[in-house]
Length: 470
Image (cartoon, rainbow, N blue to C red; front, side, top):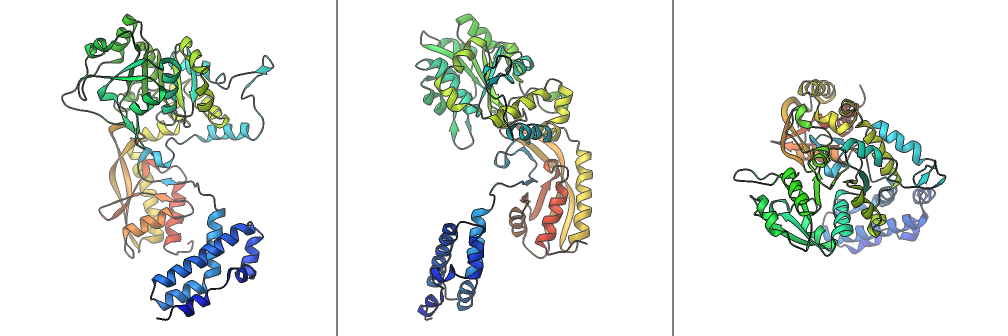
């Protein structure tokens, strides 16, 4: 095949830039972006000609050059973050943003950030204030701690605590608690970065109180307990409770720090789940400092909340890293709104989306699935097999790793395309729908499909199968 003639058919970039389609594009987007897209597309066509022997495909690429330029420019201008329908059944899906924020908390954020606020202004004194002051007393009251503050995530909280209080000191941790969280982020690495020395005690599966006691010396700065919220060791195991460690820390005059991870403020065992240690229980047991995530079981924005003894937190607040790791106004406003819900446990369970999703009954979810089944059957029933099936949801986000919750899913098997292709098409919709492919069926766990999102799923299916509204 003579390829040079096809290279010559590719329009020159300067000629393309003078076409009506491209000139119109330049009225909405900077000319330099359009020019870059034109160069990229024409260069891509050259590469395609070099690699392809399909003359029809080559001609099609050349004829559609203006449309391809337009598509590339639109990809620059399009908003990349999108509202996603979560059909995975994972309530705290790290890749999908973890905790859903309530509309009330989001409205509060919108109200304040679209104007000025007293973020760091003391209205009473008419002078500079602290961004922690808006929620410090509230968190302290709820958790039983003397003081509270927040940084941008829980790993930052651990780093700040150790850097501010125990740099150049030894910190004792059980080997079974040297966890790794998402992205290969490891507790030993955080400790090393903070400048303290890690002292491992016990074994992977068993650590005794005497292991800690034997490791204490004049260089010991603190005892650190890390709640293994993202995995469980079962079988021949033993660990030291926070109560036992608190007694030892008082006996030796050494601070006890606990990274509790998920940030539970409600006893979930009352709602049919496994018991997960609460922040209040750790403070009551005698921990001097407790840190936890804001966007896990707490149900708030991404943050690392630090609570504990006032004398210790005062030192942390003065450390240079505090400013580098501090929360922004969006997070401060959302945190205050979320913690206000916890002033009453019943209100929190009712209003905080994470807790609502956890506590949804299987019967309620089954009815939701059946309604969506009916809507989809009416539109694409001749193109797909659609069934309601039992399944199990999970908490996710490194919380309660063994916990499974009875739920119901919609199972869809397309008849005129592969299931994997349907799954991909759903991910590329204007409002992407994310599900799972199991046994050649698309599974959408309805526990995590929020109210009103059924219409988004229905619209996506109609769009994929090229159907008009009935």
